[in-house]
Image 1 (cartoon, helix red, strand yellow):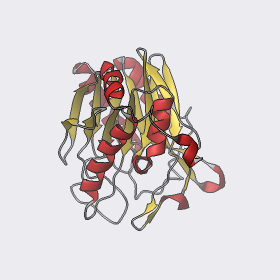
Image 2 (cartoon, rainbow, N blue to C red):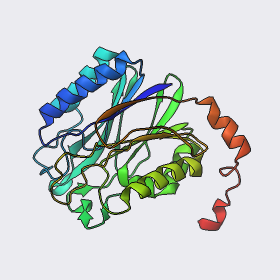
Image 3 (cartoon, rainbow, N blue to C red):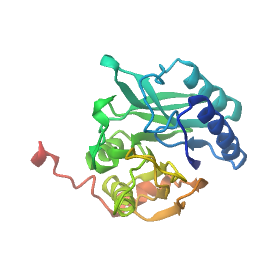
Length: 263
């Protein structure tokens, strides 16, 4: 399966960001990508008041993404914000395209490194997978990468790859952590991890997590197969889904789990 990771920088205006999604999706489709993955907060960057911008999954912005996916014949995964109770929002991944319609609300909220996502965001509570051309893919968002049990749950649900959309916070050691965590989650669950981050902004402001770039595709053996730098970049990768079975046969971490000890 050929996928594209669209490492771009979004701003505070949803309509302008939708234009970027259309431009980058067309580029990815021209390169033969079947799935095009955009970062967390593709609708509007962090550091923007989110509640006034949030729209339902049947709203104008999401419908715009659907039109782009339908016009290009691709499955598009993009981060947006949907309304939640008490004036908060859900940090949502929309996955849409021919034969595909799914959404995932970020489960683990980024209350770390001086940022408190839970002040404005309602956490999700369900694992989400989708099937594209007979291949099961799972969805995860940014801070989720620090929780190996989620990725193992993806594998238990039959996923061969996790699509991880992020807007990673900058800071000392954060790039090393990003690299380590993405590779570790692939090893934990012996599946592909395709991790797309927002590109590093030219003029970062404040403490909001606005991305550091360095998107990457990691194989089920934990090796990095494709990687981007810090700046905007379209990363094209081939996922050999048959490799998952061979790695799981050699490295039987899922089969060897003693889950009864941790319940």
